[in-house]
Length: 182
Image (cartoon, rainbow, N blue to C red; front, side, top):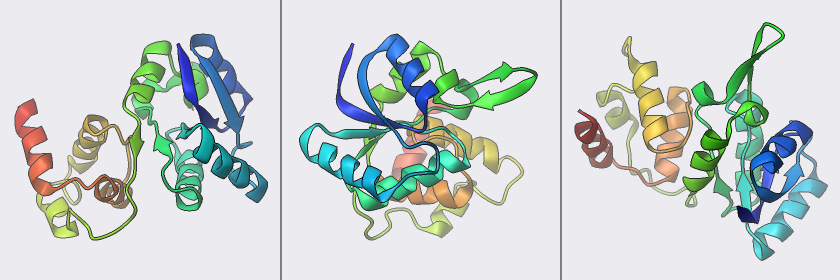
């Protein structure tokens, strides 16, 4: 399968894993070593071919994603659920695009999202709390389920709230999703 857009990943092993399954061009950020020159290159590709940000489901990956989205509006974002992007390597749990299987990669790319420019929130913080997405013993599990349902990855409360607002998700939309799953 050929991917038209340039996929921005963190490193060479991510590129190698994607190329195992897809005909794809990538740009590696060298982890959090994202430079202004690399951002300029991403801006150019966003104008000509399009860009998909596909970073690891961890804090450095989120920081890279946030920095690119801020500098280059209109990029698509692909998220791996952290529970699907890991393996045990030399006795340690490793998380990332390089460890994901073909099905997880294809599903993440199939559900790419493009954030709208930040504007008025469609989901207030009080609504987020009312939905039990923070402040309850099972809030982390609820956030995980919502993150997977909306294909925005797992996140802490503040990050998930921001991502849902960037997607213009409302309380009613979240309630409909919850009701459909029950």
